[in-house]
Image 1 (spheres, rainbow, N blue to C red):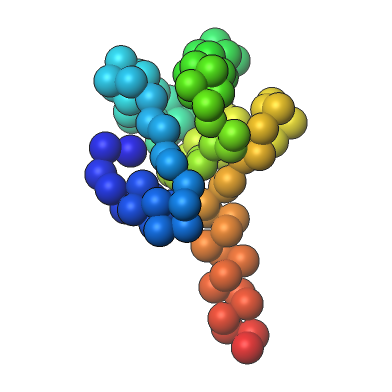
Image 2 (spheres, rainbow, N blue to C red):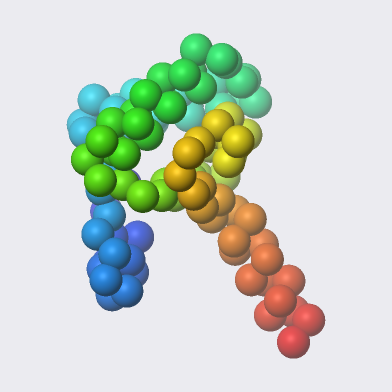
Length: 101
């Protein structure tokens, strides 16, 4: 989130990327390390991720990029009122489409 990969690609399309504040980024990184990478799905963690997402919505976010392979294990479209973009799914579908073309 702190690097410009997604930000630059989105900016090229006229979309401004909003990232969580430092405390949110630290929290997400810690939960990835201590829970999600180990396959642990915790409802309290889901609620906290949703709070972070709602803070972004309050800042103007109209969608959320689930930019780590483990985050879609915790956060699903049905948990959100804005579009979720699962980069694992997006990349997988693009790879299949490329392989079949």
